[in-house]
Structures are given as structure tokens and as C-alpha cells.
Image 1 (cartoon, helix red, strand yellow):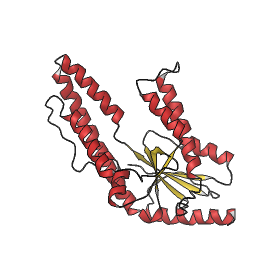
Image 2 (cartoon, rainbow, N blue to C red):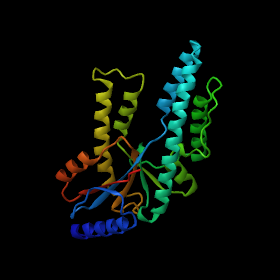
Image 3 (cartoon, helix red, strand yellow):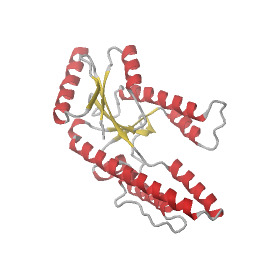
Image 4 (cartoon, one colour):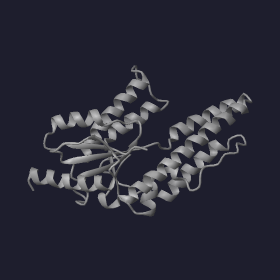
Length: 258
């Protein structure tokens, strides 16, 4: 297949998708793009955040400061409700457009990893238990929403619809990012700057991995790449730089806005 044919196919697929979803944010559209990155920003549950919250609660409980625990539980409950609602909306969007992709690209999993070893029901239940532990610490009255969509759209779609998930991360970078959030972080570089640098490079590596042909399953060759990735990520600069360096593998960029 020639480059011209690949670009024509990408244009046809993009046109068909935009006809179904005309309100989507068109961050970058090129006549000669071979791929389209559709960033689906997600607010998502964080075990790191939950664990830090429990550490605070244990400290405050030792100081008999139950009012601070209750106040923080109120905030956490609102956050979980917000995440739950957003993840449900993402599920609805992805189900609506299931014919436009063969797999979903997901953060938090190294390329070309899949969910083959995941036990989604068990993981959803575990995340729900962790959230409830924080919400009910010291006789708190909040409970996690039912069902626990906040555990993540990818887990629910993998469990209920058997949707294939393909990791898009660079494994070493992902490990480095996790370390940057941990207690073991010991670099002289300020933590926030280090995390920002990790995220920036992760975004570049995600684009690189989505441009690859996943040879283990040739169905994953659609030109539109549906990427579930945190709402704090911004791919525009990375896409512009990628397009300069890879003129025959250019990306359009779309963003699903709330």
C-alpha cells in the first residue's frame, strides 16, 4: 500500500467519525496525516492518592482530630462521585463508537501489553474496597457509588464487552514515573519538575507506540487511535514535534471534551 493510499484511508475514517461526532475538539487536522490521535481525557482513581489519604487519617486519628477526617472524606466522596460520572460518560462514548476502533490504547500498561492476565471483577472490587476504607475510616458515613465506574472505563469495557486493551507506555519510563510519586524518590531534581519531565516523555513514547503496527494482531491497524489517558496530559506539543520528525507518519489530534 502506498503512502497516498494510507493517507486516503485515514482521511475517510476521520471524515466518517467526525460525521458522527461533529462537536469533538479538532486540535489539529492535516491533509496528509496518516493517523489520528483521539485523546479521551480521564479523571481516574489513584491508589497512591488513596494511600496518602489513609496516612493522613491515621495521623489525625492519633491526634483525635475527627473533624478533619470528616471534612476530607466529604471532599474525597465528591471527587469519587465526579470520577464515577466521568468514567460512565466515557463508557457510553466508547460504546457508541465501538465500530471505529479495534482496540483501546490505555495508559498505565507498557506496549505491547494487553489485559490478558487481568481479573477485572476482582480488580474493580479491590478498588471499591480501598475507596470505602477511606470513606468509612473512623466511622465515616460515605460509601462508594454503585456500580463502581470510578475503577475505570477500560476495566468495565474489558469485563462487560470484551474490548481489547493495548498498553501504550514505555515500561522504563512508567516505572520511573511511579518511583517519582513514591516515598523512595531521592533525586536532587524537585519532584514536581521530575514528574513533569516524565509525563512529557511518556506522551512522546505513547505517540511512537501508537504509530507501530501491532504484529501480534493485525486488526489493530485503524488510523484513529482511541487513547484513554489522564486529563492532565496534553499531546499537542508532542504531536507537532512528532509530525516534524516523521513526515510520512503524521498525526491529527482530536480531544474529547466533557
